[in-house]
Image (cartoon, rainbow, N blue to C red; front, side, top):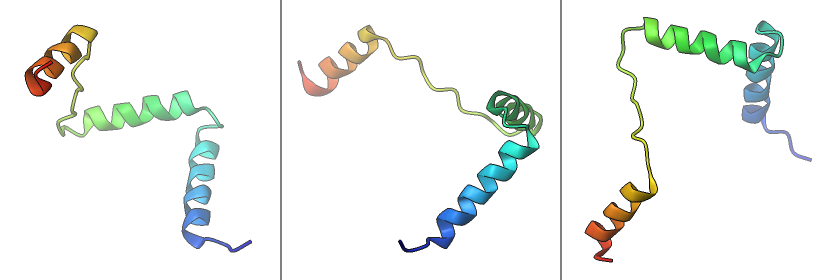
Length: 64
């Protein structure tokens, strides 16, 4: 099989991140969230979708 150096680099970085957090993805996500919040940069918050919202959009856009 052909080797893909780009994928190998990505896999290596992922393994290092997991090792730094003792294979605890939850701990990594919490730390990443803290870093993001402390950066002072705006963080997008996706809008909540409900069946009613989706139905209203379909009605307005598609004329249903």
